[in-house]
View (cartoon, rainbow, N blue to C red):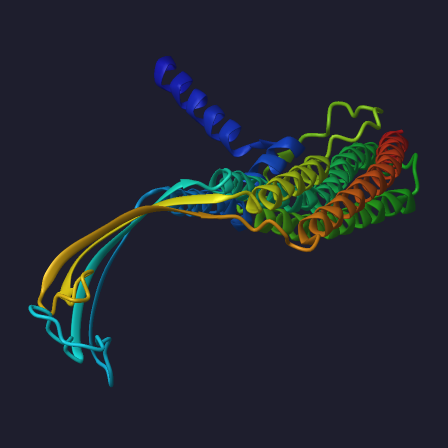
Length: 356
């Protein structure tokens, strides 16, 4: 008989332990980062960037075009005299060609654009991290409010236990005429007041846990025990994701400058054309002929009237703006951290005062 009883007790203990789940502030942070819908965009942005970079790399491959045309023109080239064996051109002409163009050199513009695209994607992904991090302030609001209610509830239950024990003592004194019945009524009124406070705490706690559940996309019931933060560093050094975001913005601007610099370098292409038509390359042969042409083509914009230099100056000013934004953010964040440290100290002092 003892063995089944022990197993039953162990089973009940395990069920009770499973029901008493604990939740830390870091757990909430992790759940928000993992489950919030915006977090899915980071992977989608990476996939989009991979496709766009692949499309850019296609520019290094040969470009092949098939062309066909049939025309009728009002006049054709003619000779002032007739020559033996030379026929006049037909006014209806036909041509079909296969054109191939191969990029040989463009100053690395394609690679520069690919790096710029990578930098843009990293900046966009970091912006998502910034938004997710900002959700932590809402997590803090709900978590610390629920934690404070949890501590109030524990103190009220402890107080109720003491008052209940006192009631039993008073009831004994009233029974033997040593204490007036009004003393018992005062204590019972105190218990009613505590019960009312516990009811208020219950519903307020349910509301806070519901908000925290919706924010973390996790079911957090009233049986969950919130764990107070063990410690909080007084270090005011800024380690927010916004700092990396500003740095990535500056890096993106540098890649933009590189693209501008390479866009004015010469471009060299090899080309070839093979075709069949009437007339062919020999305009004096009035018949269908096959033909081909191969060659190199170079293009260099040697004068852009200072546009490149102006664009670079604009990018430099943009970098200065980003630097200014970063410095402003660092200053404001240090002040917010100091305020946060003060609030946590105030919360701890309130807790100790309630415990006395």
